[in-house]
Image 1: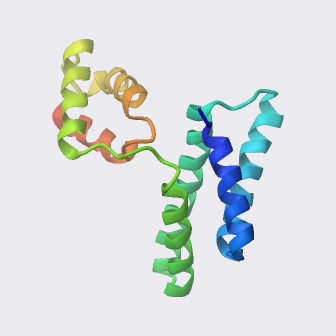
Image 2: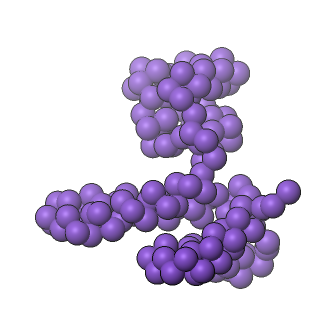
Length: 149
């Protein structure tokens, strides 16, 4: 079975052949970020760790979008959103609202969480199961609301 890194490499070759300069530049940037982390930590990244790099790049672009919108730079907003769309193709299928709620409910039950003080325990359980498949900031807000925060 091909790894996520293999898929990214194949997509780079496809973008190169098709002459998609913007997509190619973004995929090369992603590969550089993956390689940088491998060199820094002296490891080979597995799919979960590669996914974390992709998520970090998406998060950085979402933050940039907010900055560009407040600065009135719609041209840059469009560019960042296009990059987010490409990066999201590497994420696994996203969980539905109901699936996220079910994970939160199960995590609260398994950890015995009773208040916002227990949010870290619940978040740890949910994050392990939903990594890459849900916006963890939104999940955190829902956990906090469920625990009465």
